[in-house]
Image 1 (cartoon, protein in one colour):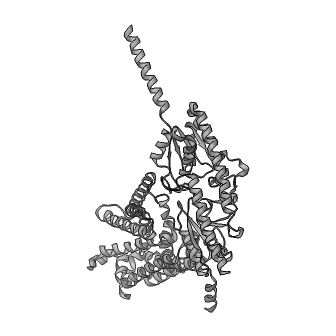
Image 2 (cartoon, chains in turn red, blue; image 1 turned 90 degrees about the horizontal axis):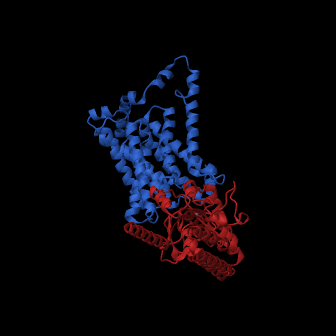
Length: 310
Length: 315
Ligand SMILES: [Zn+2]
């Protein structure tokens, strides 16, 4: 009889140890893009282990899941996506896995009336470079993490609140920076329409050479119109994006040059993906500030040279 | 003529660049593709186009660059390997032409896609969306692209002009050519390789499906109008050229119209028109001369079987 008691005791001890180690191991989260991964990391801190399904510099609109990805998704404790059809080719898969596994699409946290419609009940998914819109998202991540790891619920909520506040502060900061650029110079031309929220928030007119998704091809007439616009309005610089091919922008610069207007390559902007770890653009805050500095640098440099000419 | 010059001078720069590049490809693809169509190997170009993916992926892996020239060289190499495989399969197995083409096409395409998705999931920079290499980006061709396309097109057409006699023999009657002591197998390979080069170089201008169409449709149009080789080459080249120019100009009239597909639509319009009204072969013609004139027997003449002797005499 005592032997049985011993066995039970040992077993329960092992069980307790098992439970403890489980509680100590971080929540494994798979985020679809690097932008979403950064959000989860900001909210979860040390208590989560986040991986991004897509590496940095990958275009989420055209990304297709590999069998290894499906494996990673199924094994994760929590799946976090941007949603709003950013992950165009993954949407169906995410929906199917999301029915069985804990799943959040952070884009759903943004109030519908603050989203930009792109027709057919679809909304522009590029919400992250409007820091104010993005500040809606941390709390949903905190809720999802709390459901999995209720003991740390307070930790998640505090971090989410802090991060939302940081984002609002960043928002004000960026607004202040753009005040220095005269209104008529505030035009942002890039390879695809990833910056419409950004433009709306910070007072820039945004024109994409491609459509909202990188899947749509620019037509020749669109290209000609854009060249016309750049020449007419004497736009000083156009920008390329880290995760999108810069062919369209190159053709645009060439077309304007043929009309005697030299438009410069203003620099490379982070759009659908953040930069590699360790670089300045590996967090959303870093990438946003880097974009703002690139844009202001390019637009302001020419506005001073313009003044010298005048 | 002056009117035309004035009209061209007023076209926007980008339209001119795209028109020049696509017209060169259209013309050369028509000329070179004629041999593919005559040898009933219309889809060789398609196989070559899809085989580029493997090379494109390898080029990115090896160099770490996503430069168009680098990718093109890689794509060209793997397309060549695929073509050689195609010829070998045909020579050493009893597989039929179309089956061999289908095998090479699907295997190489599958391999390419697998390679790319493997690279993407390992986070290799620049590998995302690499398969879109096959789609082309007609509207954003630059002057450098157009120059490259033009050069390759001219060289390709020159090859045909210089080797017209040999090409004709091999295209119409390979057995006869071999019996007469020609290096038929080598010439055949060269012809196929030319088609492959044309397709690969045309990829950025039109994309895989469209450039394949440019290799097939203009020669098909030309065959409706003539059964003699040289006129066929001229007509195919002209149809390719006109489809390209027409497609580019049409697509530049309205926004959000992709250029490549419009070019192929124009070429298809030529084909439909030809099938209806071409002399001898055209449907309208045939219904009119139903009484059994010489035209009927002419349409039944198989180019591949009957014309080589005629050709020989002409050359
Ligand atoms: Zn995007």
